[in-house]
Length: 130
Image (cartoon, rainbow, N blue to C red; front, side, top):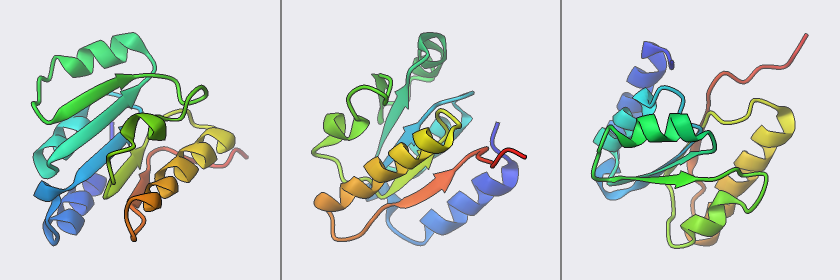
């Protein structure tokens, strides 16, 4: 689960803008506590998860503004499913390998094709081994 400090930091950062008019993307849902927070802060949340039990648990939260995608970003990039979306924020908590995180960041930055500004990006539990 994400630390309380990170959650409070996200609230502080996005409370200054107009998050109620913006879209967030969450890659990897974990316990869904971040999904609930993002749903309260943003107009729309695209929640992407590969593991079906995790996704099914998240769907039971029933937030009206959360749209769940069951997919593995090793295949077709999630960005292709969100062509009309210009996320303001991308929270990456998927596969914790360098190549996977690099791929997710690249997809998030690809969002600049529909917006002049790149989204804010937050990483969860990423560390370098050793």
